[in-house]
Amino acid sequence: WQQQQRRQLQHLGHRIKEEFQFLQTQYHSLKLECEKLATEKTEIQRHYVMTEIAKRLNVICAQLIPFLSQEHQQQVVQAMERAKQVTMGELNASIGQQLQAQHLSQHAQGLPVGPHPSGLPHPGLTLGGGSGLLALSGALGAQLAAKDERAHLEAAAAAAAAAEHHRGTDTAETMNPLAVQGAYPPGAFGLPPPGVNGDLPGAAGYGAGLHLVSPQMNGAAAAAAAAAAGYGRSPVVGYESPHPHMRVPGLPASLQSASGKPAYSFHVSADGQMQPVPFPPDALLGPGIPRHARQIHTLNHGEVVCAVTISTSTRHVYTGGKGCVKVWDISQPGSKSPMAQLDCLNRDNYIRSCKLLSDGRTLIVGGEASTLSIWDLATPTPRIKAELTSSAPACYALAISPDNKVCFSCCSDGNIVVWDLHNQTLVRQFQGHTDGASCIDISNDGTKLWTGGLDNTVRCWDLREGRQLQQHDFTSQIFSLGYCPTGEWLAVGMESSNVEVLHVSKPDKYQLHLHESCVLSLKFAYCGKWFVSTGKDNLLNAWRTPYGSSIFQSKESSSVLSCDISPDDQFIVTGSGDKKATVYEVIY
Image 1 (cartoon, rainbow, N blue to C red):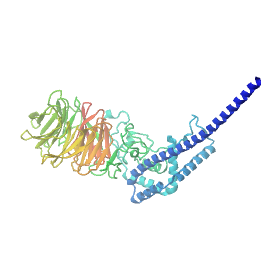
Image 2: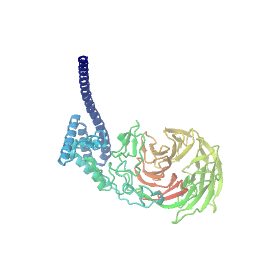
Image 3: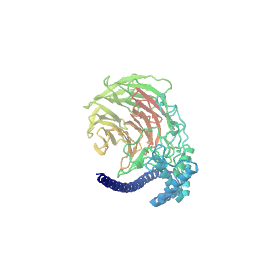
Image 4: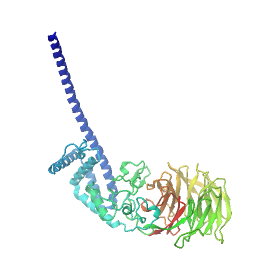
């Protein structure tokens, strides 16, 4: 029995040994397969990372090249073409050489190269992580430098020279003390010019002590950034936005800057291709272009200010709130109280628009009522001289013809009502908007009318023939618009937070992404070279026509609902949700 038991144990031992050998063979096979998969994963990660680096470098180069001379532009383009010819074999060899040099350097300094203390792979070898991306970026920089170091140095030097040539010299001015809480230092309102698209004005004012050149940058990008920082200009990379939470929804990574901060101005071609705009050297220079603006008056209306207008003489400002328009004399400094109050509409209904005739003697008021009020301002005490009644329950916006003979009202039912001011009669209605008509402007020659609606459309009307000429469809409601006094461009403020600048006869347009919420009002300067927009994000922004370089900004303490610019382009008035209006002086 014992012998039989021994034989059974021997047989069982042989079986266990065979199964162990089989499992060991299987383990080795799986190990080889895992190593093979890990190698393939590394290659895929390397390809992906290099693709991302190439996209970002391409954006950086596209933004820098317009600032270079023709000779340097050609050199940079040639260097980029040579870089595209680098094969994966050469790239892998370069990466291997750099990693080997890194290992030798660490050994020479007595630093461990083994596993990371956390148990994770060494950060310098992790291709999928951020430092691995930097390692690959450094390897690419080394490869490109070996190919054409001289071209990169000249490109960086040219970028520095361009920055020196076009650098801004503006100083900060005082601003609303309520607007400087948080990220804005006291007194930071006047903002120096931006560098390239993506750099907001006022980098120094917004982020004192910012390290503009990251220690992780390398190659030509770091050289250009260092050169730009040395001349007071914000570089393309290494710049921290004053609105760090702001991101442009739906934009591909190729349109973002290398620092992760998106460019804010884009040209959209006829086929829908979107590209960041390289601003011309004179974007913020020349006659008629403001340097900055400063607050000079605060007008405490007492109710939310939904409408503002300033007289041709720039002496009087009119603010529309709940049930009344208040008149202010801003010709003298000091604290302000209204010089007159015009009770309009119903007591609990908001004024939505008020417009002065050019002689300053007549004011037209519309709002949450079916009636427009026409005020005679020439009498010692202003009085209503007529009322115009339509079938619509509310008027959202008003426009006056250049000859002061006709008034156009945007109605909540979508119609545009045309009024004869002399005879005080309704003479025509333009029908087309399928929801409320929210905003309006008229061409300087009085032949075309532009309207925007809550039906996501902008429409152009021929006033001589009484018909619709154009229709532009959008994916967002239209809250504001303005027609450039010099023609060709129409700026549109969206509920989606975008501002779009359309060419009126070509399919070209610009899309501007600085507001973080809906754009509530918009107004062109009378010279046509710039315009302002205001939003629910408390922001007043001045833009260069048409490509939207940001000239200056003001952050108010509440939503900015309305704005106007004086006919001499010397003053800006805004109305806000904190029951006041603000008067700014434009500094040239």
